[in-house]
Amino acid sequence: MSMFGAIRDTLYAMTSCFSSPTIYLNRRTFRMVKLLGEGGFSYVYLVKDTNTGLLYALKIIRCPFGSDSVKDAMKEVEMYRLFQHENIIKVIDTCVVQDKDGAKIVYIFLPYYKRGNLQDAIDEHNLNNTRFEETEMLKLFRQICYAVRALHTHQLPAVPISRAEQSDSAAPQPNGQTDIVPFAHRDIKPGNVLISDDGDTAILMDFGSLIRARIKIRNRAQALLQQDLAAERSTMPYRAPELFDVKTDTELDEKVDIWSLGCTLYAMAYGKSPFESSSTEDGGSIALAAINAQIRFPENDQYSSEFKDLITYMFVVEPKQRPDIHQ
Image 1: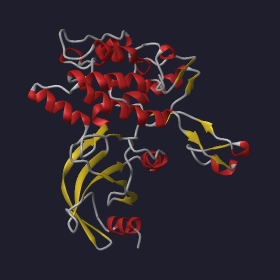
Image 2: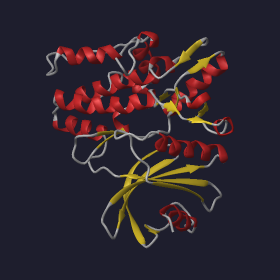
Image 3: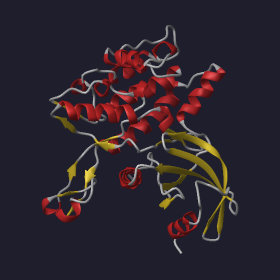
């Protein structure tokens, strides 16, 4: 029996979300250890193989709104599998089961990294009143950029028209040609960047917000839809200004991620996004600060002027003038 089949058979037998602290998978037993995180309708648990001692992260997505929410959850799985890159998290297995109340639940098995995410490292520095070394930051940040570059330069496979019409990740191309269709993550932040166990590799995760990047906004209804999606899926202090107030007759693109990268690098250096403070907890204040690119650097800090220039380089309010991932 395949691992997928074992997971499916086991979880179908469960009456609710982890009514038992133990999961049986094809002669292997996984024990629930602890809750790692939660958000919206999703939870991430640490599970342990009781035979080998290996640890895994199990993401559980409840889908109370029927087939559409199941489709959204499975699209996240599809995106993990679409982007095979050393700096992008790899999905181990998935399945969909029905809870006793009729709601569908999507289970996603992912690797577990004991160092946690970049936000954990930032929090530790804040607690100890320390900071990243500039070279260490740039090494990790470069790897985040490699992951983002993979999203922004995605090549659609050449497939027959009948198959392309059924997939968001493929398109019909004549004579075996491929086309580059950028995807945008839309929620790049320290909490969505894992750190490998040796501390040397950054791994981008959480593709629930991932979307084809280039979206033409032709009317107010489309603008409000994208604005609402951003409000739901893009963390406010890391959100690009064009997503706070989406304009008609414009095009959203992958450069929303460049702004978020700037926020992330700033947070690595100074402990939080430049738009995140006790005085800007109100959403309107954060939006206004972002739209006006109001960023400040602490006086007499330890980082070079070139480093701060790199951060400033990414905070260009007008998307057309903002650098792309290749610059």
